[in-house]
Image (cartoon, rainbow, N blue to C red; front, side):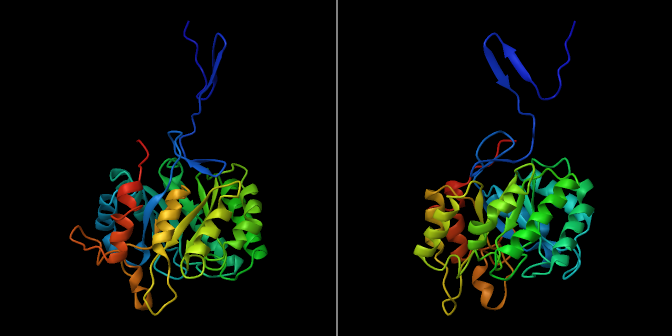
Length: 320
């Protein structure tokens, strides 16, 4: 007689007990992110400002994949500040990323810099609209709830809002890896060091990652970068660098070389900002001059993609 076993079970052979882990999404083990194959996943990726360049998505995904990146962070809009990305367009993006073997992290960008809880609730409502699109894609899609929600350099209000957000998504049935940006437009790592554990503990599935955005404040010089990364490694949950980028000479500088080298030394994941389309004094953040296969890498783009500790040397894609 054939014995039917449940999907996840213990197999006992003599004195050997084997636990079969059937969960197919990303999980967390201590400070590590674990991919669906049970391997440590160290993000090496690129941000793309899709919300502002909606017609370029196919070429942008293809060209970012060609760098060897293992993840793309895609900017979505829920319609509160920029034109809304409808669910079917998100479905298309997921399919494109799958075909190019890129994990995709989506962020809702409209709440950037806001301390208003309603803006965070609007981002959560948008995720709920996407539920039918992304549930079942836990091995492909990572949820960055709201880009840089909470602009103030304060830990308490940031933590309370994000604890609510994590619990709301879990209660609605999302089992994906969740990413929460630090306070202060992502540049106040102290919020993570002071209150990050509260946010992590709010997740009953323990699949939350905290994210620092390293520019002139969080990443302005070598000592500051190393201090922030070292403190991150003292946490009991994963911390990534969800954004970092260069600055024009007249602006406060960002030490990109140290970010790349020290993150590699300490095995910290990162996603560079951004492929193209920055304006004004942020133009130095562009990695290319456009989305297509004929693009030219900027000096910053070449540093992130081709130079020591860049994507081509350090990116490892999950095995599909």
